[in-house]
Image (cartoon, rainbow, N blue to C red; front, top):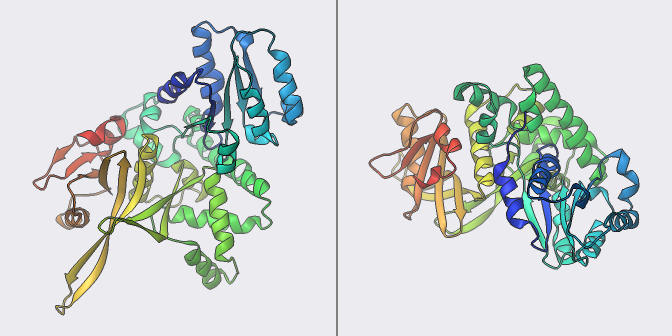
Length: 417
């Protein structure tokens, strides 16, 4: 079964022959190699590019171990280019090559080569590397299958697809398996033997148990505000062990650089400023998160929130967690300060949306809770509540848009309703 990744393929098409290094990034096993070596190659062949003018090197394969040497790789590419016609170079998992930026900059001086590289670690896109590329690096970020991509390849109805996606997520290989046991074992195995192993080896981490426990804590607390100091205190009080907040902060950065997790900053809407403490963390793939917890912790509200967050990133939005300061009288008539939360403050250019995610809105109390923070936002940008189910979007008397998850996920322009 070939799963279409049309949106990403289109991004490569419009970048073809633009004189820049196309850098395809994303978590390992999310489909970067398939996009480049299968889908994009198929497109090049269809428009008449000779197969001998497509150079493919997978640097994570043992068969190309010698080509991880930068000088040997550069020489090999030069030898393959036998004429003046355009060549297309695919370098997979470029972080396996030391000094790869020097190789790429050298190749940029060749006029008849168009370069595409993939990488599974954001550190190689640091400011130093961008400087090395002299502004000629062009990133395309790939995510695991969105629900729309997953559903398009799923043999069943929406409800079954949604239940499956909430548990096993959107890694392309998982979508190919038919048995639940296969899916679960695959996710647990690659988490331990690919993702964690990569992070540990790349960053030379000595205490593997510490970062493993940190991953468990973050997985248990998706959508909950936390910070390295809180996590460190938990280790001290509950485990009787020392895991200082600086080390925790570094380890969180390593997980983020490997695209395993994403950080959502907290933004004070009325004060129009970022609040540094208590970030929220979400997993790039909800199936990996669930597998890490052995599929025990299945809170639909937090899982929905994580899926909505990922979908917003896939659509190219900048996403923060919102805070609204309000003052209200308590039972004694005294004026007290409260901070209300808006699940997501979503920005793209001059456009902004405020989004609440609610699994259940059946009771008046729950509706009041979800609407309260939206009512206290002092601007007129669109306010949206996404609820579980298949409800088509509608507006209540306050102008808030309420829509079901099905409509939100399967309509790329759903926020424009």
